[in-house]
Figure 1 (spheres, one colour):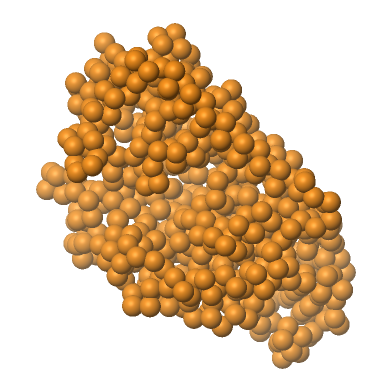
Figure 2 (tube, one colour; figure 1 turned 45 degrees about the horizontal axis):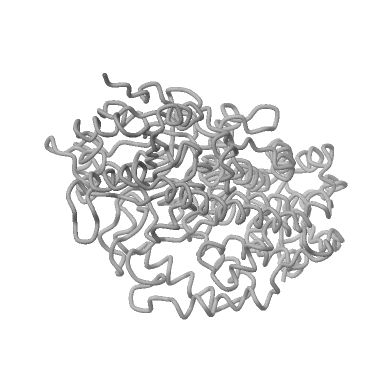
Length: 610
Protein backbone atom coordinates (compact mmCIF):
# COMPACT_ATOMS: atom_id res chain seq x y z
CA UNK A 1 0.00 0.00 0.00
CA UNK A 2 1.33 3.43 -0.96
CA UNK A 3 2.44 5.62 1.94
CA UNK A 4 3.63 8.83 0.29
CA UNK A 5 3.49 11.54 2.98
CA UNK A 6 4.26 14.68 0.96
CA UNK A 7 0.70 15.75 0.19
CA UNK A 8 0.49 18.14 3.13
CA UNK A 9 3.99 19.61 2.73
CA UNK A 10 4.46 23.37 2.59
CA UNK A 11 7.31 23.04 0.08
CA UNK A 12 6.16 23.26 -3.55
CA UNK A 13 8.98 20.87 -4.53
CA UNK A 14 7.84 18.21 -2.12
CA UNK A 15 4.24 18.64 -3.22
CA UNK A 16 5.34 17.98 -6.81
CA UNK A 17 6.33 14.48 -5.63
CA UNK A 18 3.18 13.78 -3.63
CA UNK A 19 1.77 11.59 -6.43
CA UNK A 20 4.92 9.49 -6.96
CA UNK A 21 4.55 5.74 -6.30
CA UNK A 22 7.35 6.17 -3.76
CA UNK A 23 6.78 6.16 -0.01
CA UNK A 24 8.39 9.57 0.43
CA UNK A 25 8.89 11.01 3.88
CA UNK A 26 9.96 14.50 4.84
CA UNK A 27 13.34 14.95 6.46
CA UNK A 28 13.21 14.43 10.21
CA UNK A 29 13.96 12.04 13.09
CA UNK A 30 10.90 9.92 12.31
CA UNK A 31 12.25 8.79 8.94
CA UNK A 32 15.58 7.75 10.44
CA UNK A 33 13.85 5.98 13.33
CA UNK A 34 11.89 3.96 10.76
CA UNK A 35 15.15 3.05 8.98
CA UNK A 36 16.69 1.89 12.28
CA UNK A 37 13.65 -0.21 13.07
CA UNK A 38 13.69 -1.84 9.63
CA UNK A 39 17.54 -1.90 9.37
CA UNK A 40 17.53 -0.39 5.87
CA UNK A 41 19.47 2.49 4.29
CA UNK A 42 17.93 5.91 3.76
CA UNK A 43 17.69 7.42 0.28
CA UNK A 44 17.67 11.23 0.52
CA UNK A 45 16.88 12.99 -2.74
CA UNK A 46 17.45 16.76 -2.75
CA UNK A 47 16.16 19.21 -5.35
CA UNK A 48 13.95 22.25 -5.79
CA UNK A 49 10.76 23.13 -7.61
CA UNK A 50 12.23 24.75 -10.75
CA UNK A 51 15.11 22.30 -11.22
CA UNK A 52 14.95 20.85 -14.75
CA UNK A 53 16.98 17.70 -14.11
CA UNK A 54 15.00 17.10 -10.94
CA UNK A 55 11.88 17.07 -13.11
CA UNK A 56 13.57 14.68 -15.54
CA UNK A 57 14.63 12.21 -12.86
CA UNK A 58 11.17 12.37 -11.33
CA UNK A 59 9.53 11.47 -14.64
CA UNK A 60 12.07 8.76 -15.50
CA UNK A 61 12.53 7.09 -12.12
CA UNK A 62 10.34 8.30 -9.27
CA UNK A 63 7.18 7.96 -11.36
CA UNK A 64 8.09 4.33 -12.17
CA UNK A 65 5.94 1.93 -10.09
CA UNK A 66 8.64 -0.77 -10.17
CA UNK A 67 11.23 1.61 -8.75
CA UNK A 68 8.65 2.77 -6.24
CA UNK A 69 8.14 -0.83 -5.10
CA UNK A 70 11.89 -1.43 -4.87
CA UNK A 71 12.35 1.69 -2.75
CA UNK A 72 9.38 0.79 -0.57
CA UNK A 73 10.80 -2.66 0.15
CA UNK A 74 14.49 -1.95 0.69
CA UNK A 75 14.88 1.74 1.66
CA UNK A 76 13.34 4.60 3.56
CA UNK A 77 12.96 7.40 1.01
CA UNK A 78 13.22 11.06 1.99
CA UNK A 79 12.64 14.16 -0.15
CA UNK A 80 14.37 17.45 0.72
CA UNK A 81 13.78 20.89 -0.80
CA UNK A 82 17.21 22.56 -0.82
CA UNK A 83 15.55 25.98 -0.68
CA UNK A 84 13.50 25.11 2.37
CA UNK A 85 16.35 23.23 4.09
CA UNK A 86 19.72 24.77 3.13
CA UNK A 87 21.22 23.34 6.34
CA UNK A 88 20.46 19.79 5.25
CA UNK A 89 21.55 20.49 1.68
CA UNK A 90 24.89 21.95 2.82
CA UNK A 91 25.63 18.92 4.99
CA UNK A 92 24.74 16.42 2.27
CA UNK A 93 26.69 18.38 -0.35
CA UNK A 94 29.76 18.32 1.88
CA UNK A 95 29.43 14.54 2.21
CA UNK A 96 28.73 14.07 -1.50
CA UNK A 97 31.99 15.81 -2.40
CA UNK A 98 33.76 12.64 -1.24
CA UNK A 99 32.21 10.81 -4.20
CA UNK A 100 31.94 13.37 -7.00
CA UNK A 101 33.13 16.86 -7.86
CA UNK A 102 30.17 17.34 -10.23
CA UNK A 103 27.87 18.54 -7.49
CA UNK A 104 24.41 19.86 -8.19
CA UNK A 105 20.74 18.97 -8.16
CA UNK A 106 19.11 16.55 -8.04
CA UNK A 107 21.44 15.36 -5.30
CA UNK A 108 21.08 11.63 -4.64
CA UNK A 109 22.49 10.43 -1.32
CA UNK A 110 22.37 7.22 0.69
CA UNK A 111 22.64 7.40 4.47
CA UNK A 112 22.83 5.02 7.39
CA UNK A 113 19.99 5.20 9.93
CA UNK A 114 22.44 7.22 12.06
CA UNK A 115 22.37 9.98 9.41
CA UNK A 116 25.83 9.37 7.89
CA UNK A 117 26.26 9.45 4.10
CA UNK A 118 27.97 6.38 2.62
CA UNK A 119 27.35 6.98 -1.10
CA UNK A 120 26.20 9.93 -3.22
CA UNK A 121 25.79 11.22 -6.74
CA UNK A 122 23.55 13.57 -8.68
CA UNK A 123 21.24 12.70 -11.59
CA UNK A 124 21.07 9.04 -12.55
CA UNK A 125 19.30 8.06 -15.80
CA UNK A 126 16.86 5.15 -16.21
CA UNK A 127 19.39 3.34 -18.46
CA UNK A 128 23.21 3.57 -18.46
CA UNK A 129 24.63 6.52 -20.40
CA UNK A 130 28.37 6.27 -21.05
CA UNK A 131 30.07 5.92 -17.69
CA UNK A 132 26.94 6.92 -15.76
CA UNK A 133 25.07 3.89 -14.41
CA UNK A 134 21.32 3.60 -14.35
CA UNK A 135 19.44 4.49 -11.18
CA UNK A 136 18.34 0.84 -10.80
CA UNK A 137 21.98 -0.22 -10.92
CA UNK A 138 22.85 2.30 -8.23
CA UNK A 139 20.07 1.01 -6.00
CA UNK A 140 21.20 -2.59 -6.52
CA UNK A 141 24.84 -1.74 -5.76
CA UNK A 142 23.92 0.20 -2.64
CA UNK A 143 21.70 -2.61 -1.41
CA UNK A 144 24.43 -5.19 -2.09
CA UNK A 145 26.96 -3.14 -0.09
CA UNK A 146 24.44 -2.70 2.73
CA UNK A 147 23.67 -6.41 3.04
CA UNK A 148 27.02 -7.99 2.13
CA UNK A 149 29.69 -5.46 3.17
CA UNK A 150 28.13 -3.57 6.05
CA UNK A 151 31.46 -3.07 7.81
CA UNK A 152 32.77 -1.15 4.75
CA UNK A 153 29.61 0.95 4.61
CA UNK A 154 29.88 1.86 8.29
CA UNK A 155 33.61 2.61 8.04
CA UNK A 156 33.16 4.89 5.01
CA UNK A 157 30.19 6.66 6.55
CA UNK A 158 32.07 7.20 9.81
CA UNK A 159 35.15 8.59 8.03
CA UNK A 160 33.10 11.08 6.01
CA UNK A 161 31.18 12.21 9.10
CA UNK A 162 34.43 12.70 11.00
CA UNK A 163 35.86 14.84 8.19
CA UNK A 164 32.73 17.01 8.16
CA UNK A 165 32.80 17.36 11.93
CA UNK A 166 36.43 18.48 11.86
CA UNK A 167 35.75 20.97 9.05
CA UNK A 168 32.78 22.45 10.91
CA UNK A 169 34.88 22.81 14.07
CA UNK A 170 37.62 24.61 12.13
CA UNK A 171 35.05 26.97 10.60
CA UNK A 172 33.61 27.74 14.02
CA UNK A 173 37.08 28.49 15.40
CA UNK A 174 37.80 30.83 12.48
CA UNK A 175 34.50 32.69 12.99
CA UNK A 176 35.15 33.16 16.69
CA UNK A 177 38.68 34.44 16.20
CA UNK A 178 40.02 31.84 18.63
CA UNK A 179 43.51 30.55 18.16
CA UNK A 180 45.11 33.98 17.94
CA UNK A 181 45.69 36.84 20.33
CA UNK A 182 42.28 38.33 19.62
CA UNK A 183 43.74 41.71 18.64
CA UNK A 184 44.04 41.13 14.90
CA UNK A 185 41.15 39.33 13.18
CA UNK A 186 43.44 38.43 10.32
CA UNK A 187 41.85 40.32 7.45
CA UNK A 188 43.87 40.23 4.23
CA UNK A 189 45.59 43.50 3.35
CA UNK A 190 44.19 45.93 0.82
CA UNK A 191 47.04 45.02 -1.55
CA UNK A 192 46.23 41.31 -1.23
CA UNK A 193 42.55 41.96 -1.93
CA UNK A 194 43.25 44.17 -4.91
CA UNK A 195 45.65 41.59 -6.32
CA UNK A 196 42.61 39.33 -6.83
CA UNK A 197 41.63 41.55 -9.74
CA UNK A 198 44.73 40.36 -11.57
CA UNK A 199 43.71 36.75 -11.02
CA UNK A 200 40.28 37.47 -12.43
CA UNK A 201 41.73 39.35 -15.39
CA UNK A 202 43.79 36.27 -16.23
CA UNK A 203 40.63 34.14 -16.11
CA UNK A 204 38.53 36.51 -18.24
CA UNK A 205 37.08 35.16 -21.46
CA UNK A 206 38.32 37.96 -23.68
CA UNK A 207 36.26 36.70 -26.61
CA UNK A 208 32.82 36.37 -25.06
CA UNK A 209 33.12 38.12 -21.71
CA UNK A 210 32.77 36.71 -18.24
CA UNK A 211 35.07 34.13 -16.70
CA UNK A 212 35.98 30.59 -17.68
CA UNK A 213 34.31 28.38 -20.22
CA UNK A 214 30.99 26.55 -20.32
CA UNK A 215 28.69 26.50 -18.46
CA UNK A 216 28.74 30.22 -17.71
CA UNK A 217 27.11 31.71 -14.64
CA UNK A 218 26.46 35.36 -13.79
CA UNK A 219 28.34 34.75 -10.48
CA UNK A 220 26.91 37.86 -8.86
CA UNK A 221 29.15 37.80 -5.74
CA UNK A 222 32.16 37.98 -8.05
CA UNK A 223 30.65 40.90 -9.96
CA UNK A 224 29.88 42.71 -6.72
CA UNK A 225 33.49 42.32 -5.57
CA UNK A 226 34.59 43.87 -8.86
CA UNK A 227 32.14 46.72 -8.27
CA UNK A 228 33.61 47.28 -4.81
CA UNK A 229 37.16 47.20 -6.13
CA UNK A 230 36.21 49.60 -8.95
CA UNK A 231 34.63 52.02 -6.47
CA UNK A 232 37.87 51.77 -4.50
CA UNK A 233 39.75 53.10 -7.54
CA UNK A 234 40.75 49.89 -9.33
CA UNK A 235 40.45 50.68 -13.04
CA UNK A 236 41.13 47.08 -14.08
CA UNK A 237 38.23 45.88 -11.93
CA UNK A 238 36.01 48.56 -13.47
CA UNK A 239 36.76 47.27 -16.96
CA UNK A 240 36.18 43.65 -16.00
CA UNK A 241 32.85 44.55 -14.44
CA UNK A 242 31.65 46.61 -17.38
CA UNK A 243 32.56 43.92 -19.90
CA UNK A 244 30.92 41.18 -17.85
CA UNK A 245 27.70 43.13 -17.34
CA UNK A 246 27.59 44.01 -21.03
CA UNK A 247 28.04 40.34 -21.99
CA UNK A 248 25.19 39.31 -19.70
CA UNK A 249 22.94 42.15 -20.85
CA UNK A 250 23.56 41.58 -24.58
CA UNK A 251 23.36 37.78 -24.55
CA UNK A 252 20.64 35.15 -24.46
CA UNK A 253 21.15 34.97 -20.69
CA UNK A 254 18.94 38.06 -20.40
CA UNK A 255 15.37 37.45 -21.46
CA UNK A 256 13.33 39.94 -23.46
CA UNK A 257 11.43 40.95 -20.30
CA UNK A 258 14.66 41.87 -18.45
CA UNK A 259 14.92 38.80 -16.24
CA UNK A 260 18.16 36.82 -16.17
CA UNK A 261 18.42 33.05 -16.46
CA UNK A 262 20.46 30.93 -14.05
CA UNK A 263 23.31 30.11 -16.45
CA UNK A 264 24.26 29.60 -20.08
CA UNK A 265 25.26 26.14 -21.25
CA UNK A 266 27.72 27.50 -23.84
CA UNK A 267 30.79 29.67 -23.52
CA UNK A 268 29.30 32.48 -25.64
CA UNK A 269 26.43 32.91 -23.14
CA UNK A 270 23.98 31.17 -25.50
CA UNK A 271 21.49 28.32 -24.89
CA UNK A 272 20.46 29.30 -21.37
CA UNK A 273 19.40 26.94 -18.65
CA UNK A 274 16.05 28.65 -18.57
CA UNK A 275 15.05 28.71 -14.92
CA UNK A 276 15.10 32.18 -13.36
CA UNK A 277 16.09 32.50 -9.72
CA UNK A 278 15.32 35.41 -7.43
CA UNK A 279 18.85 35.41 -6.01
CA UNK A 280 20.64 35.82 -9.38
CA UNK A 281 18.47 38.74 -10.35
CA UNK A 282 18.67 40.33 -6.90
CA UNK A 283 22.44 40.09 -6.92
CA UNK A 284 22.72 41.72 -10.33
CA UNK A 285 20.55 44.62 -9.19
CA UNK A 286 23.27 45.66 -6.75
CA UNK A 287 25.82 46.21 -9.55
CA UNK A 288 23.84 46.81 -12.77
CA UNK A 289 23.59 50.07 -14.65
CA UNK A 290 20.34 51.99 -14.71
CA UNK A 291 18.82 50.38 -17.80
CA UNK A 292 19.78 46.84 -16.82
CA UNK A 293 18.60 47.36 -13.26
CA UNK A 294 15.27 48.68 -14.48
CA UNK A 295 14.74 45.60 -16.66
CA UNK A 296 15.52 43.22 -13.83
CA UNK A 297 13.28 45.15 -11.43
CA UNK A 298 10.40 44.98 -13.92
CA UNK A 299 10.84 41.21 -14.15
CA UNK A 300 10.71 40.94 -10.37
CA UNK A 301 7.67 43.23 -10.24
CA UNK A 302 5.72 41.57 -13.04
CA UNK A 303 6.64 37.91 -12.56
CA UNK A 304 7.99 37.06 -9.11
CA UNK A 305 6.14 39.60 -6.96
CA UNK A 306 3.11 38.48 -4.95
CA UNK A 307 0.14 40.70 -4.24
CA UNK A 308 1.45 41.43 -0.74
CA UNK A 309 4.80 42.68 -2.10
CA UNK A 310 6.99 39.70 -1.26
CA UNK A 311 8.94 37.87 -3.97
CA UNK A 312 8.67 34.15 -4.71
CA UNK A 313 11.78 32.06 -5.26
CA UNK A 314 11.93 31.30 -8.97
CA UNK A 315 10.28 30.62 -12.30
CA UNK A 316 10.55 27.19 -13.89
CA UNK A 317 12.50 26.31 -17.02
CA UNK A 318 9.68 24.11 -18.27
CA UNK A 319 6.19 24.93 -19.47
CA UNK A 320 3.33 23.01 -21.05
CA UNK A 321 2.88 23.85 -24.74
CA UNK A 322 0.56 21.90 -27.05
CA UNK A 323 0.07 19.36 -24.29
CA UNK A 324 3.78 18.64 -23.89
CA UNK A 325 6.11 19.58 -21.04
CA UNK A 326 9.11 21.28 -22.69
CA UNK A 327 12.14 23.19 -21.45
CA UNK A 328 12.73 26.72 -22.66
CA UNK A 329 10.16 26.84 -25.44
CA UNK A 330 8.01 29.52 -23.80
CA UNK A 331 11.03 31.78 -23.39
CA UNK A 332 12.04 31.33 -27.02
CA UNK A 333 8.72 32.73 -28.22
CA UNK A 334 8.27 36.49 -28.86
CA UNK A 335 6.77 38.38 -25.91
CA UNK A 336 3.48 38.98 -27.72
CA UNK A 337 3.07 35.27 -28.41
CA UNK A 338 3.92 34.28 -24.84
CA UNK A 339 0.90 36.11 -23.51
CA UNK A 340 -1.35 33.59 -25.29
CA UNK A 341 0.38 30.60 -23.67
CA UNK A 342 0.50 29.33 -20.12
CA UNK A 343 3.74 30.62 -18.60
CA UNK A 344 6.21 28.38 -16.78
CA UNK A 345 5.04 27.80 -13.22
CA UNK A 346 6.51 29.61 -10.24
CA UNK A 347 8.25 28.20 -7.22
CA UNK A 348 5.90 30.06 -4.91
CA UNK A 349 8.02 29.89 -1.75
CA UNK A 350 8.70 33.18 -0.04
CA UNK A 351 12.18 32.75 1.45
CA UNK A 352 13.28 35.25 4.09
CA UNK A 353 16.93 35.38 3.08
CA UNK A 354 16.28 35.58 -0.65
CA UNK A 355 13.82 38.41 -0.08
CA UNK A 356 16.52 40.11 1.97
CA UNK A 357 18.77 39.93 -1.10
CA UNK A 358 16.03 41.42 -3.28
CA UNK A 359 15.34 44.21 -0.77
CA UNK A 360 19.05 45.01 -0.70
CA UNK A 361 19.48 44.97 -4.47
CA UNK A 362 16.41 47.10 -5.13
CA UNK A 363 17.32 49.60 -2.40
CA UNK A 364 20.91 49.97 -3.65
CA UNK A 365 19.86 50.26 -7.30
CA UNK A 366 17.04 52.67 -6.51
CA UNK A 367 19.29 54.94 -4.46
CA UNK A 368 22.17 54.79 -6.96
CA UNK A 369 20.05 55.51 -10.02
CA UNK A 370 17.54 57.84 -8.40
CA UNK A 371 14.68 55.45 -9.21
CA UNK A 372 11.97 55.69 -6.53
CA UNK A 373 9.96 52.76 -7.92
CA UNK A 374 12.81 50.37 -7.16
CA UNK A 375 12.96 51.63 -3.59
CA UNK A 376 9.17 51.25 -3.34
CA UNK A 377 9.44 47.63 -4.49
CA UNK A 378 12.07 47.04 -1.80
CA UNK A 379 9.83 48.61 0.81
CA UNK A 380 6.87 46.45 -0.25
CA UNK A 381 8.89 43.26 0.05
CA UNK A 382 10.30 44.32 3.42
CA UNK A 383 6.89 45.12 4.83
CA UNK A 384 5.48 41.78 3.65
CA UNK A 385 8.34 39.71 5.05
CA UNK A 386 8.36 41.60 8.34
CA UNK A 387 4.62 41.02 8.72
CA UNK A 388 4.70 37.29 7.97
CA UNK A 389 8.19 36.02 8.87
CA UNK A 390 9.44 38.23 11.72
CA UNK A 391 8.10 38.67 15.23
CA UNK A 392 9.47 41.11 17.81
CA UNK A 393 12.66 41.58 15.81
CA UNK A 394 13.39 37.86 15.35
CA UNK A 395 13.04 35.72 12.22
CA UNK A 396 10.46 33.07 13.08
CA UNK A 397 9.72 31.76 9.58
CA UNK A 398 12.25 30.85 6.91
CA UNK A 399 9.84 29.76 4.20
CA UNK A 400 6.14 30.14 3.53
CA UNK A 401 3.74 29.44 0.70
CA UNK A 402 -0.03 29.78 0.34
CA UNK A 403 -0.12 26.35 2.03
CA UNK A 404 1.29 27.86 5.22
CA UNK A 405 4.56 28.46 7.05
CA UNK A 406 7.27 25.83 6.91
CA UNK A 407 8.60 24.32 10.12
CA UNK A 408 12.14 24.60 8.72
CA UNK A 409 14.30 26.65 11.09
CA UNK A 410 15.64 30.06 10.18
CA UNK A 411 19.31 30.05 9.21
CA UNK A 412 22.11 32.59 9.12
CA UNK A 413 21.11 33.16 5.49
CA UNK A 414 17.74 34.49 6.62
CA UNK A 415 19.03 36.59 9.49
CA UNK A 416 22.13 38.00 7.78
CA UNK A 417 20.65 38.76 4.37
CA UNK A 418 17.45 40.25 5.75
CA UNK A 419 19.39 42.42 8.21
CA UNK A 420 21.60 43.76 5.43
CA UNK A 421 18.64 44.37 3.14
CA UNK A 422 16.71 46.22 5.81
CA UNK A 423 19.70 48.46 6.57
CA UNK A 424 20.15 49.36 2.90
CA UNK A 425 16.43 50.15 2.72
CA UNK A 426 16.66 52.27 5.88
CA UNK A 427 19.56 54.25 4.40
CA UNK A 428 17.72 54.73 1.09
CA UNK A 429 14.40 55.80 2.65
CA UNK A 430 15.52 57.40 5.89
CA UNK A 431 13.05 55.18 7.78
CA UNK A 432 14.67 54.11 11.04
CA UNK A 433 12.12 51.37 11.75
CA UNK A 434 13.87 49.07 9.27
CA UNK A 435 17.22 49.73 10.98
CA UNK A 436 15.87 48.91 14.43
CA UNK A 437 14.68 45.50 13.25
CA UNK A 438 18.03 44.95 11.53
CA UNK A 439 19.83 45.75 14.77
CA UNK A 440 17.85 43.03 16.56
CA UNK A 441 18.58 40.55 13.77
CA UNK A 442 22.29 41.29 13.96
CA UNK A 443 22.20 40.65 17.70
CA UNK A 444 20.61 37.26 17.00
CA UNK A 445 23.13 36.43 14.31
CA UNK A 446 26.17 37.35 16.36
CA UNK A 447 24.82 35.34 19.29
CA UNK A 448 24.32 32.40 16.88
CA UNK A 449 20.74 31.89 17.98
CA UNK A 450 20.02 29.23 15.37
CA UNK A 451 18.25 25.94 15.83
CA UNK A 452 20.39 22.97 14.77
CA UNK A 453 18.50 20.21 12.97
CA UNK A 454 18.17 17.24 15.34
CA UNK A 455 19.21 14.64 12.75
CA UNK A 456 22.34 16.59 11.79
CA UNK A 457 23.07 17.32 15.45
CA UNK A 458 22.81 13.65 16.40
CA UNK A 459 24.96 12.63 13.42
CA UNK A 460 27.51 15.37 14.08
CA UNK A 461 27.30 16.52 10.47
CA UNK A 462 25.86 20.04 10.75
CA UNK A 463 28.27 22.08 8.61
CA UNK A 464 26.90 25.57 9.06
CA UNK A 465 26.66 27.80 6.01
CA UNK A 466 29.11 26.94 3.25
CA UNK A 467 30.72 29.41 0.79
CA UNK A 468 28.66 29.87 -2.37
CA UNK A 469 29.37 30.94 -5.92
CA UNK A 470 25.87 31.95 -7.00
CA UNK A 471 24.59 34.18 -4.22
CA UNK A 472 25.78 36.30 -1.34
CA UNK A 473 26.16 34.31 1.85
CA UNK A 474 24.30 35.03 5.05
CA UNK A 475 27.56 35.15 6.98
CA UNK A 476 28.81 37.93 4.73
CA UNK A 477 25.46 39.70 4.89
CA UNK A 478 25.59 39.57 8.68
CA UNK A 479 29.14 40.96 8.68
CA UNK A 480 28.17 43.77 6.33
CA UNK A 481 25.14 44.61 8.47
CA UNK A 482 27.29 44.67 11.61
CA UNK A 483 29.78 47.01 9.94
CA UNK A 484 27.00 49.37 8.83
CA UNK A 485 25.56 49.41 12.34
CA UNK A 486 29.03 50.16 13.73
CA UNK A 487 29.19 53.25 11.54
CA UNK A 488 25.71 54.37 12.56
CA UNK A 489 26.14 53.79 16.30
CA UNK A 490 29.86 54.17 16.96
CA UNK A 491 29.98 50.67 18.48
CA UNK A 492 33.46 49.41 17.61
CA UNK A 493 32.64 45.92 18.87
CA UNK A 494 30.28 45.50 15.91
CA UNK A 495 33.07 46.34 13.47
CA UNK A 496 35.34 43.81 15.21
CA UNK A 497 32.60 41.19 14.96
CA UNK A 498 32.22 41.88 11.25
CA UNK A 499 35.94 41.34 10.75
CA UNK A 500 35.88 38.04 12.63
CA UNK A 501 32.99 36.78 10.50
CA UNK A 502 34.71 37.34 7.15
CA UNK A 503 38.44 37.12 7.92
CA UNK A 504 38.96 33.42 7.21
CA UNK A 505 36.74 33.45 4.13
CA UNK A 506 38.46 36.54 2.77
CA UNK A 507 41.94 35.09 3.31
CA UNK A 508 40.89 32.00 1.36
CA UNK A 509 39.35 34.28 -1.26
CA UNK A 510 42.66 35.96 -2.04
CA UNK A 511 43.80 32.61 -3.43
CA UNK A 512 40.46 31.17 -4.58
CA UNK A 513 38.05 34.05 -5.17
CA UNK A 514 35.24 31.97 -6.62
CA UNK A 515 33.01 31.15 -3.65
CA UNK A 516 34.58 33.80 -1.41
CA UNK A 517 34.26 36.97 -3.45
CA UNK A 518 31.49 38.38 -1.27
CA UNK A 519 33.78 38.15 1.77
CA UNK A 520 36.51 39.98 -0.13
CA UNK A 521 34.25 42.97 -0.72
CA UNK A 522 33.37 43.29 2.97
CA UNK A 523 37.02 42.79 3.97
CA UNK A 524 38.03 45.61 1.64
CA UNK A 525 35.46 47.90 3.27
CA UNK A 526 36.72 46.96 6.73
CA UNK A 527 40.32 47.67 5.77
CA UNK A 528 39.41 51.19 4.66
CA UNK A 529 38.93 54.03 7.18
CA UNK A 530 35.30 54.38 8.14
CA UNK A 531 33.54 57.25 6.39
CA UNK A 532 29.99 58.31 7.13
CA UNK A 533 27.95 60.59 4.87
CA UNK A 534 24.64 62.04 6.07
CA UNK A 535 22.48 64.23 3.87
CA UNK A 536 19.66 66.08 5.62
CA UNK A 537 17.03 67.59 3.35
CA UNK A 538 13.27 67.92 3.11
CA UNK A 539 13.42 68.44 -0.66
CA UNK A 540 12.97 65.30 -2.74
CA UNK A 541 14.73 67.03 -5.65
CA UNK A 542 17.60 68.51 -3.66
CA UNK A 543 20.88 68.39 -5.68
CA UNK A 544 22.61 67.08 -2.56
CA UNK A 545 20.83 63.78 -3.13
CA UNK A 546 22.44 63.37 -6.54
CA UNK A 547 25.91 64.02 -5.09
CA UNK A 548 25.26 61.46 -2.35
CA UNK A 549 24.75 58.77 -4.99
CA UNK A 550 28.40 59.09 -6.01
CA UNK A 551 29.69 58.72 -2.45
CA UNK A 552 29.11 54.97 -2.09
CA UNK A 553 32.39 53.06 -1.93
CA UNK A 554 34.02 50.47 0.37
CA UNK A 555 34.14 51.78 3.91
CA UNK A 556 31.52 54.49 3.32
CA UNK A 557 27.96 54.51 4.65
CA UNK A 558 25.55 56.98 3.02
CA UNK A 559 22.23 58.02 4.58
CA UNK A 560 19.69 60.52 3.24
CA UNK A 561 17.12 61.73 5.78
CA UNK A 562 14.75 64.57 6.52
CA UNK A 563 15.31 66.56 9.74
CA UNK A 564 12.42 64.67 11.36
CA UNK A 565 13.94 61.35 10.34
CA UNK A 566 17.36 62.37 11.69
CA UNK A 567 15.74 63.09 15.03
CA UNK A 568 14.01 59.68 14.99
CA UNK A 569 17.31 57.88 14.31
CA UNK A 570 19.03 59.76 17.12
CA UNK A 571 16.21 59.04 19.56
CA UNK A 572 16.68 55.25 19.27
CA UNK A 573 20.44 55.23 19.69
CA UNK A 574 21.91 55.80 16.23
CA UNK A 575 24.28 58.47 17.44
CA UNK A 576 25.60 59.44 14.00
CA UNK A 577 22.38 61.43 13.56
CA UNK A 578 22.54 63.31 16.86
CA UNK A 579 22.23 67.06 16.27
CA UNK A 580 21.68 66.62 12.53
CA UNK A 581 18.15 68.04 12.56
CA UNK A 582 18.98 71.72 12.93
CA UNK A 583 20.07 72.51 9.34
CA UNK A 584 18.03 71.84 6.21
CA UNK A 585 19.57 71.23 3.73
CA UNK A 586 22.98 70.10 4.90
CA UNK A 587 25.48 67.36 4.08
CA UNK A 588 27.89 65.95 6.65
CA UNK A 589 31.04 64.06 5.64
CA UNK A 590 32.58 62.28 8.61
CA UNK A 591 35.71 60.15 8.99
CA UNK A 592 35.54 57.69 11.88
CA UNK A 593 32.61 59.84 13.05
CA UNK A 594 34.62 63.07 13.14
CA UNK A 595 32.67 65.36 10.83
CA UNK A 596 33.68 68.29 8.69
CA UNK A 597 31.61 71.46 8.75
CA UNK A 598 28.27 70.85 7.01
CA UNK A 599 28.14 71.51 3.28
CA UNK A 600 25.11 73.53 2.22
CA UNK A 601 25.53 73.33 -1.57
CA UNK A 602 26.07 70.50 -4.00
CA UNK A 603 29.45 71.90 -5.10
CA UNK A 604 30.74 72.16 -1.55
CA UNK A 605 29.46 68.66 -0.79
CA UNK A 606 31.12 67.21 -3.89
CA UNK A 607 34.41 68.87 -2.93
CA UNK A 608 34.29 67.30 0.53
CA UNK A 609 33.57 63.87 -0.88
CA UNK A 610 36.42 64.14 -3.36
